[in-house]
Length: 117
Image 1: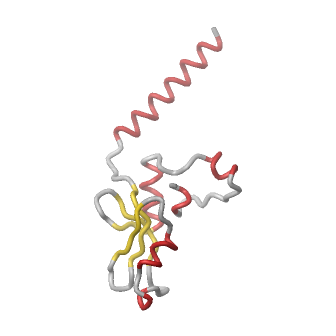
Image 2: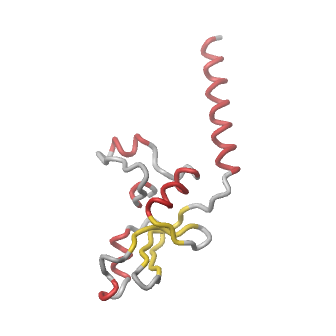
Image 3: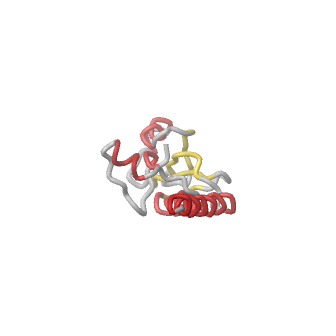
């Protein structure tokens, strides 16, 4: 009976998790992006990384003033900190086991494309 009780508790937690995912109203993160100093946004589709975005930008726009971030489903640009909050709310961040298996240190509060895909 104890094993059955634990299993039912596990199922209850999973149901709550899936319900919260289904009820999320935040648009999901869909692409890595960089906004240049003039406000123009460059992006590449998944599983592209920010280094790939830099390759799409004119050389004169690859400046330190550029802001690295992400694009959400609505096309809005989010910096790394804003995007982290959205990705976490939408359960898009890869599980801890991924970081351990790939010897990657997680960076809570700051989103990197490696956290997503």
